[in-house]
Structure formats: C-alpha cells, structure tokens
Length: 278
Image (cartoon, rainbow, N blue to C red; front, top):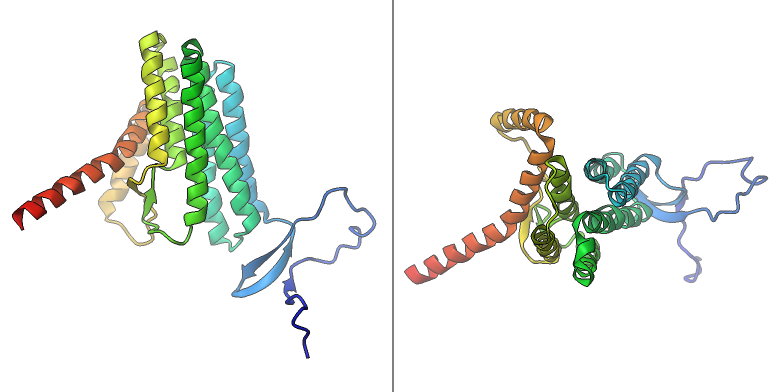
C-alpha cells in the first residue's frame, strides 16, 4: 500500500552520465516537472533550442542598451528588431517541438524586461532626455514600470483570456515605437530641440500607459488559412520594408499602437448609436 506522504513518481528524462558523477560542476542542476506526450516527467536540464532563441533576444537587447548609450541609435534600432524576432520565435518553437517549460517561460519574461522595458527607456533617454533633467528620467522610469506591470499581468493571465487579442499594447511593439523615434531621427539628422525632447517624453509615457491599458489589440495568431491576396500583400510590404526599413517600422508600430484606442472609440460610438435607436 502506498504511503500518502510519499511524493508521486515521475518518469525521468535524465540520461545516464558516467562522467557526471566524477566531474560535478559547482552549479545546481535545474530540475522541474514538465508534460511530455500527455504524461508528467521529471526533467533535468533545460530545452536548448527555444532557450537559445531567448538568449539571443537577451543578447540583442543588451547590445541595444550599449549601442544607444554610446550614441549609435541605428545599431540600437536594429538590435531591438532582432530581439523582437527572436522573442516571437522562441515560444512558437517551444510549442512546435513540445519543449515548453516553466524555466523557459520565466527566462523569456526576464529577457522581455531587458529587451522591451529597460533597453528602450535607456535608448531614448540617451538620445533626448538628458537635457530634461528630472522630467527625463521620470518619463523613462514610468515606461520601465509600465513594461514590468504589463509583463506581470500577461504572465498571470495566460490561459484565461482570448488569445486572438492582447490586453494592452504588447511590450515588443511598445519597445519598437519608443526606439524607432531616435532611430529615424538619427537617419534624418533631426536636431533634438527642447520641444522635440518634451514631445518624445510625452510619447514615451503615453506608450507606457498603453501597455497597462485595457485596450484590446489583435494578436495576429492565425491558425487557419488566409486569402491568397494576403500573401501578395505581405510580399509587397516586405519589398517596401527592404527599401525603407526605418520608416516602415516606425509607421507600422504607430498604426498598431493607435488601433487599440481607435477600436475602443469606434465600438463606443457604435454602441451609443445602437442605444439611441433602441
């Protein structure tokens, strides 16, 4: 008869390692219970491919900070783009290869905080906020705080919301919008006047607030087929992006960030008209 105090038994995915017993590294081995093939297994170690992509995003985000603080806003912008691509791939790769884990989810969240929270705020601060004094660092801090709140809320809402939509502006898009401002400004040698700095500070705070808002944004997580014209449109967009990446990325993030409030206003007006007719 099994003792109720005994821990449940799990299948182990740990391979026999004759050398591991002799050469123990002074680092604790990670161990967690994951689901594989419909059964619970005890996993020692971490899944390599999805976590490498997360590590790549973290590296790009850290490089963006270094580049931005050095005044190289072009490289900082491209680094944020790369971080966004890696962040978009790691979760999908984990699901496709059935290599999801609690470690991967936490690692991804920490990486997102650096890439899409800390990096954009420091980049835009280095570009145009230093002359604003306390207002400059306050605007940057508000953005970082909103990014942290957005990520925390997203983590606890997993599995409880409609996956077709994000609640609040996604942090990668917010990071892109904030970072692409100095990116485009550096390309066109736009002078950072006090007015430009104040305008950028207002934008940074507004984007931060969009992250913690209740506006719904379409997630574009499409599982089925789409009309062929969508694919043709994607080809055209890629062609234009190859010619004008700075402008396309900035305008795209502005349009997407605006879609949440615009949709909310449209639905509110539609509801008021419906109520008036009834």
